[in-house]
Image (cartoon, rainbow, N blue to C red):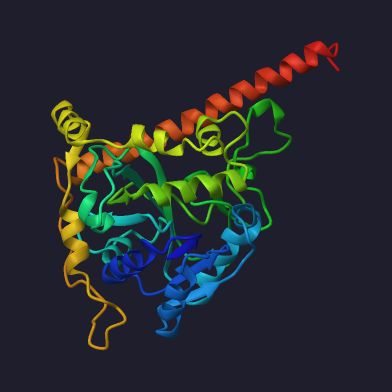
Length: 346
C-alpha cells in the first residue's frame, strides 16, 4: 500500500493497523512536511519493518510531479504483487474475504481494480475516537473510485484515480486508438503494443472515507488546501477561513441526530458500525505477539449493501467520472473553436 500524508496523526496509526490486519504486507509512505507527530508514528512502524518512510518533495504538487510514480515503483522494488493507492482517511473494505485474498483472486489477465468510495458524515466533535463517533455514512458508494494495480516497474501515475495511471513502455496508450479509417495510411487491425494493465470487470472492494473528523482537523485541511492553491480567491471556504468564520462552515457540514434520522429515513444515509467493530478487533502490529493478520473478514458493512449493489455503484461512479471528463473536453473544444473564430479562423 502506498500513501502520501501530511499531518494525519489522529488517524494514520488506525489506518496502518486496519490494513495490516486485512493482509497488507508493507506500506510505502511519503510525508510531505508533517508537524503534528505523524512522522514519529511512522518511524515506529519503520523500525518494525512495516513501513518504508520516504520524503519525496514537500508539497502535493511535488507528489503530482513524480512523487506518486516514485512510491508506486518503490512498492514494485520491494516485491509487492499489488499496489493500493490510498490516503490516510480511507479504509479499503472488501466484501467477501480479506483485502489480500480479494486481490489475489483477480484473474491474471486483469491488472487494475477500482474501488468506489462512500463518505462518513460529519458529526459533532467529542472525546472519543473518530471510529467510535462516526458511524453514519452515505448509503451508496458513488464517490470517484480509487485504484489498486499490479506492481509494475514502468508504471506512471500522478494520482490515485483510474484516469491517472498508465504503463510507460515508450509507446503512447493512444497508439491503439486508430481513429477514423480515412486517416489510416496502413493496415491497423492488430495492436503492436497492447495495454499491460487492464481494468478488472469486478468491484469487490469499497472504500470507507472519513474526510472530516473534528473541527481542528478540518481547519488544518483548509490551511493545506489554501497553501497548495486548491482553494482559489473567492472560494467560500477560503473566504470564511480568512475572515475567522470557518467554524460556521463546519457547523453547516455537521449533521445532528435529527438530520441523521431524516437521512436514514429518506434512504441516503445508513448506520454502519461494522468498521468500528472491525477496527476494535484488529491486533496491534507492533505488539510482540501480534499475528498482524485478521484470520477472517470483518463482515459486510451495515445497511443493505451486497456485492451486486457495490458493483452497480462502482459502474455508476465510473460512468460519472468518464462523462464528467467528456463534458470537460467538450467545453474545452468549444472554447478553442471560439478562439479560432475570434482570430479569423487562424
